[in-house]
Length: 389
Ligand code: C5P
Figure 1 (tube, rainbow, N blue to C red):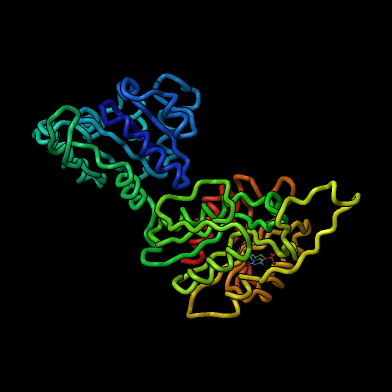
Figure 2: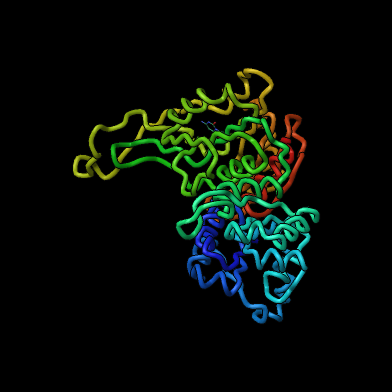
């Protein structure tokens, strides 16, 4: 949950909210009336992708003044004005934000923004000390140009810093120092300059793995093959198109990785010949035959050709409907690929690919089920990383 209060820096709250959203989080905004004088509700709704809450007396039947705080994993107030800081220190609940903060057990992070004199005022200093003593994390304020021509302490910390420090509070840094390579998306094999053979992978599960690993402190390289989602900020992004390009990118980054997660849907076959010009139906008969040749299996190459004690994780997306048969396929695959873990999920016209949710189970080398998860692709990503951590 992001609380936005009424200072000129409220326009920068948009960048903070966007940072959380791009990192894969579900962001709910509670804005004070004063905040909405500085930044429009439609902007906050568009950027957060959720309805913005302001009024204490709306949605009373849903007990919203408590519900928002209870549901939050993290509460960030940015910007926090001197007035809001005083209210939070006193535990006041005369608006929706005050109620939400009192009702939450999630970590609280506040990013103050005000004029230098107000920041140095003894009342504000005492309120900040009170909040710190209660375990609240204070990000900033920075020093620099203020609203007018003057400058000094009191500027809102940069949105990237607020997002980074807030996520570090909420999420255990159990992957700090680990180098994680993730592949995401689906490879495309050219038929001619305008056509390809591809698959329906959106790259959301892989991008969510990268986002989750980043938020847990890992250094992440994301090799993205035609992904339809945003790559998380903070990852080293390598974009590829075909399986050959993916193989080359993996080969050059795998040696530096402690963990390699092959979430990409890799084309098993490619056209033997790629036409230089567009294949014209006028030059063909009623049918067109494409000859396909097998692509190298990148995962099997990593699984059977180790460079050290890296952990290799494969994915298996299967249309098999029978649970026992699906599990049997997974067990055969992990052995064939030489991976340490295999994340198995069912795909179909309406399952897996392009969906926001995923249902997976994770097998270890022995073929035992070590984890089962169902939920948003970000929550599934965290469960996979819990197992690896
Ligand atoms: O054999 P299958 O395509 O079902 O295996 C899926 C797993 O193997 C995924 O982790 C995928 O990234 C990887 N794979 C690969 N190279 C291929 C085919 C699949 O690395 N040519």
